[in-house]
Length: 332
Image (cartoon, rainbow, N blue to C red; front, side, top):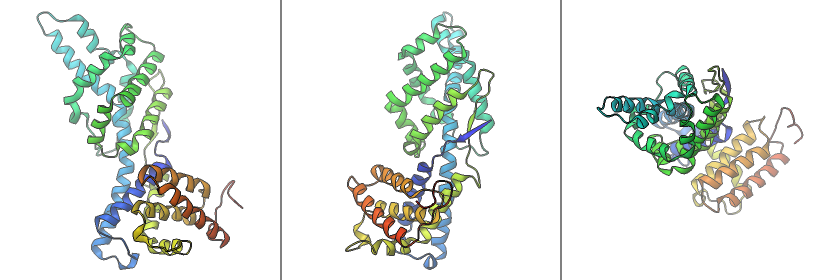
């Protein structure tokens, strides 16, 4: 069973921005026209585009990876339980505590859903982080809601859902070292965090007691997210100098070298959406890129970018260059 995609348009925009930056910086491709790229540079372009698509797919992979965390931790704890049971004087309280996650059917439902939806070549493996599982377990012992559910031999399904929601919330909100661990393992985590944590919460809330767990759909070849990313990256790269000419027409003392690289790339991406994404409203595009500017460029960039984009919008609309279609978009 499939839900909406977890990959938002904003995340696609962020990843396209990062890929454009990588393309320009990686081969020192700054002032170029598409036709003057040499064979090596075009190959680098293709590789960067492939990496962009892979990065979007990995966002979904990491969502599945994190969704499987309670099960993977439960397997580690069952091994610890077996060791405790083998002792001459086993600690029964520890034995019970080690078996907590294994007593929650929802943990197994999540694992089954993750296994069923992993793509071939799934790039993440919890065994790479297994050395830290004892620390993760020690954190659990500090949380009152863990002690509360451990009181029940067979928690209700609703109790299991609430427990796992609190479990993830505490990991993401109170354990900075957990964030650092994830970021070291998967460099895209700082960009994906907001979207991934929201999707995990939605998945837990939508899970059913009969074992059905609706998983957010994966981005695939031809899916909206992949097509949008390809268009943003490719169209912006191919029209880079043309966009600079359009910006120079509305800017005094235009000098691309004096503008922050990220600011200029953001402006160019916005122009791609203005001119080549007819179903996305202009105001939506501007607002989205201004939010991205706040997080990915300099403190003063937002005001500058907003001023440039507003001028471009006015001129291009007057010249009839921006054509939007679709419900609610005509004559706007």
